[in-house]
Length: 199
Image 1 (cartoon, rainbow, N blue to C red):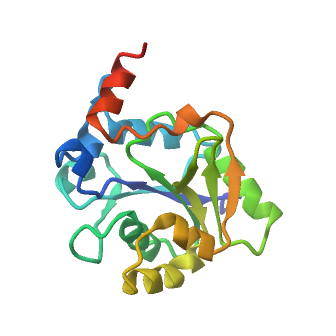
Image 2: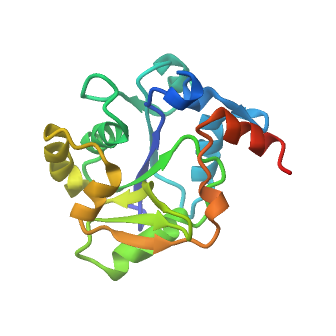
């Protein structure tokens, strides 16, 4: 029997890590665990948890496979950004909605899927929903219908790699979350150090 609201999840861990000196963000340690483990824990807290988890990775693929989840690599060369990772995930997600999260946001809210799914239920013609806070939009925390894959491929073919631009073209639904700090990206040494030693 199919679960109501069954969905897949994609953890984006395929970037260059340019702001971290080229380190693979998924394996940066914080609070005793690598960030990829925090991302998996954040997904486990969702209600319901995802039916399947994919990890977008272009380096250390064997290490990511040790998590027990499917690893997908970009179909496009040269680290063209997170949209290429999302495209690779969508290619393997033909039926279920796809919840996308970055690997470097270890404090994501436990109701991320629930609130994004509510938005798509309330707007049945919408193709996507994404998180926003009082501080900024979070286009890489989004819930996608699998039918968006074609539009994404066309945008990437045109050399356009901005996630927010793509979501705007899809007329994606912005969903407000109150706690901006839960979306903090641990993507620079300064941020990681500050989170280890909060003032």
